Image (cartoon, helix red, strand yellow):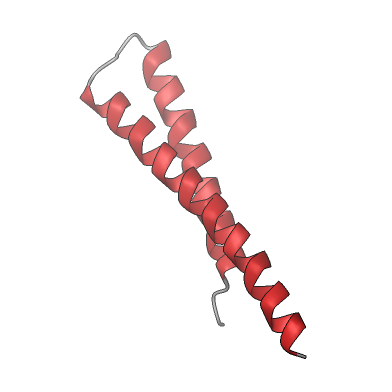
Length: 68
């Protein structure tokens, strides 16, 4: 199976949402420690990378359709 940027982008966004959920759960327990900040940073990078990959997928499809 060939992994497309769209699939990778969806996986990255899912992981970002999962890290966000874990960070929220950690804060609700009253812990604003290093691990919480690490989860927030990872979620930010994953969601940002996911959005960039999804946009790249559509840009790539547009370029491929113009060549036909």
